[in-house]
Structures are given as structure tokens and as C-alpha cells.
Length: 362
Image (cartoon, rainbow, N blue to C red; front, side, top):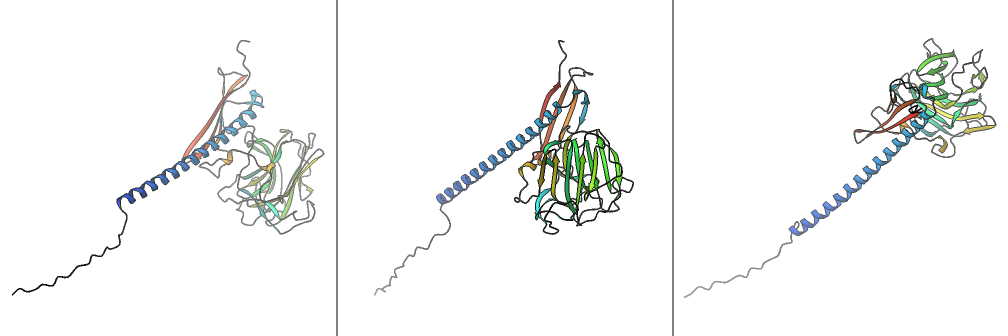
């Protein structure tokens, strides 16, 4: 009478879970937040350390300028604002590279070669025209009497208008002697000559002598100046041969820094650098390793990044004012400013001091 219904037992299967539970998500998020906080802390610490290091460099450069001013006669410090005085810095993109061509076993000035494969390279820079594009100071500070020499080879990718040479008896970028040589036919003095000797006094250039010489790319040359206290005070030699019939007798500067000079974006190799001062001879060939010798490394304005990488020395400023009243001949107030770029902003270190002597109460 009754219909029997067969019951089927349903078996429940537990499917595997997918995703995270709420607790696991919270824990993961917390770990990520901790890691972000740690990274941010490292980044802030690194940024702070970099700022401290840059500020310390700027302070050292400012103090060097202040000490240089203290060595000058206070009566020569003219009121106004301008570039640093009494100091000269390296400039340009210099590095050690190799040139295995034209190797010579000795150090003759006219052998057409250089000693050792390592050379000092000044990278070319077509953005710099008719201006210094490289400056590498010789060690030992000031040079008075003596001999200063370099061997150089200009590469054929150098832009038109290049020059290579020496700066000597320099106190700063506006007060110096320099000799420049360009490719045959170059016009370095405005009168069609490619070997010129010049004097700069407060930035005003005077051509002391000039000549047309043979100079080609991809060829090693030797350039030397001989300096003496008594006339003739300046003699210039190219490949060991004295240039100019009458050596130069100018006595405006008697001592100062010396440097290899790159001009107009030149791409050049430098080697066999030599100085002779009295009984002391210095000789550098860069073959000790891949880095510059310690004696050639110095901190300067151009080590600090700025917004004008192709203009040298412009992140140092100097302001001079009479103190305490206009017309004071004995006391000057100087303000030294060093600027640098950091995180897209311009930072400054400013140093003020009085130079000279006070006559108050005398």
C-alpha cells in the first residue's frame, strides 16, 4: 500500500580553499608596511648622509677661499661681487685610459711617442667652445722658476677650434699665463696663429707672442715652458725646439699654480708629464694603476654638481665690501658662497669674515 522511497546518502566533499583569510591579509600588509618603513628609513638616512657630506665639502672649499684671501694684500681686494680669487681648481672630465700606439722606451721630447700604455684622457665636449674645457693641476702647489712639461695627443673627433696647452704662474682663472696650441691653420689669437702665449690680468687677455706651427691630430707632441726670475722669463718649446726668436720677458706673475689646459672641447691624451724645480724632478706616466695618483687629486668647486656642468667654477661666489665704513683701506668684509645642486634644489654654504686690520681705537 505504501511506496517505499529509497533514500540516497549525499557525501559532502570539502573543496580546497583559495586566497587569504582576513588574518593572513592583515599580517601580510603589516609586514609590507614594516619593510616600506625600513626602506624609507634607509633612504632618508642615505639622503641625510649625502647632504652632510656635500655640506662638509662646500665648507672646506669656502674655507680654502677665505685662507687664500688672507694671503693677499687687503688693498688689492676691490669692492664688488665676482668669482673666487687666489685659488684654481681642476675642471673637465678626466680619467685613465690606454693608448698602446707610439710607445717609446725613453723620454725624449721629439721621439713622437710616450712611455707606458696608460694615459690621462680628457673627454671631448662639443658643448664648450672658445673656453677652457679641461684643467688638471700639477701637484705641489705654486711653481716659480723651473720647467713644466706635458706630452699630448689630440684625437680626430675633437670639435673645430680646439686647443691644448699649459697654464702657469696662475693664482686663479682670471690671473695667469697660458700657452695654447691648435691644429695647423687654427686661429687662436684672432690673427691666424695656432701657437699663442697669453697673460690674463683680472680676466683681460694680452697676447705676449704668437706663431704658426705644424700640429696634427693623432700625433704625440711635447710642450714645455721654462720659467726664470731674470729676463728672459718665459721660454716655450715644442718637441724640444725653442719657439719665438725673442723669449718673453714679462714679469707680471712670478709664481703660481700650473696645469694642463684643454680648450674648446678638445679630446686629448696626456702623458709623460714632467716638472723640474731646482734639483727636484717630478715625472708621471699614470701606469701605476687605473686611478689618478693621490697627488693629482684635489677637492674643488667643480666636484660639486650644479645646473651648468659645462661652465666651470661658477658655483663659487665672492663679495667684498669695505668695513666698517665706505672707504676703509685696512679692513674688508668678505662673503664666500659655495652652491651645489641636491634633489633638484640649490643648496648654499655661506661664510663671512673680516680681512685686514682694524684702526678703531688707534
